[in-house]
Length: 496
Image 1: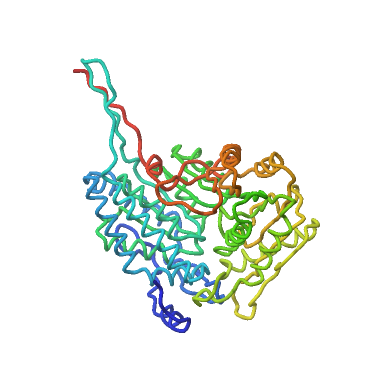
Image 2: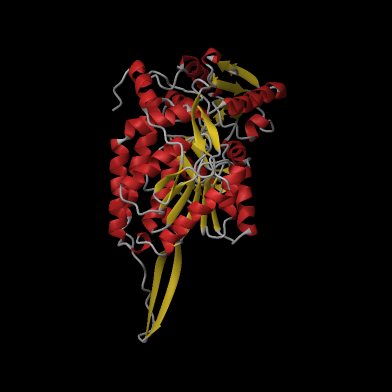
């Protein structure tokens, strides 16, 4: 539990030792000396000047990862030993939990209660889960003729490049790192330039936990430079990316233009949340819809940003969400009482405001929100926003906004709801609220989404895979299935 007042957290935040260098081959590395500013969205103030990677720094990191994979002990350790190292990382993350949570809040604006209670819990659990899984996997020996022995083994894929966004900087990094490390791979991680600080702390912790030099490296920098260099690098065997669909396309091109490295993509979403009149509890459905779109400032690839609600209950549900939006406490993310923090930065805030302006121009009805708040703080704060009378052809209903902006669309029958839900280029997640078991099964099967939540939203644990269909990407994070991204199947046929 995070037991501290706003004043205490403000003081502790000033005491956090923020890292500013790359982490390469087990040590901090300044590189060329070029830097960029990491600005806190809570007040617009610069937190640190952080080392900025070019191609030379990416080359150093990849070379370290290649040495560690080709000649180092990590891929050759017994899986149980790799698992114990991941468990030590989890223990150290727990020990440094408050420091890491404060860093996440400072760099990307997430409320401290969410950073501590949700973000860090997820990161810790991820390393612990894969640490426990590492020696539970088995290879295959298919039945053959008596004069032959066939073996099917999973070999570590090699050097992994991982590029992750700023909205869940530690959770999404952990979803890549833990299974890749458990499989015996080495990794070069490039965090978002908005949130490099927590990733650098994670790298220090991994080295302290006993990872050999070069097994986990972190380079900071902008996507068009450092991300591109990683995507094009001929010594990177696998590239795992979470972020926008537009950038995902670039990584596929980088693969084609280099060594045809495997590219795994978890991309954007415009997730539908369908509420039927027979929902078990309409008030709970509305409350969950409001929580889902406003949680993490709406900066969620799975955010239920399209609320599809039956016309017979549309007013009741929408009114309840509007009331919740008006009650929601937007404020300093270092205040434990804050329910919605700051958008990640001024540029992103302006982008979301542009979507709101477009919605108004297109004729949607603004029910609540729609503008900045707390501008005097210097931070990037937006009021929770709800539109109804949204037409399916409007940009509000089609484009990923990545902010606390809900579009409400009414429908009259189930077939129309499914058509509306699937009328998007994305296919990451969906929600459905109904008391009818047959409807739950049939609609879940009909929805083109990697995850469907029934009578809940954003639920699940590490035992289930996560990923998308269509232009929301390929491959899966979480669960044992994530290891498929970081291993190669090898067949050995022995003639006896």
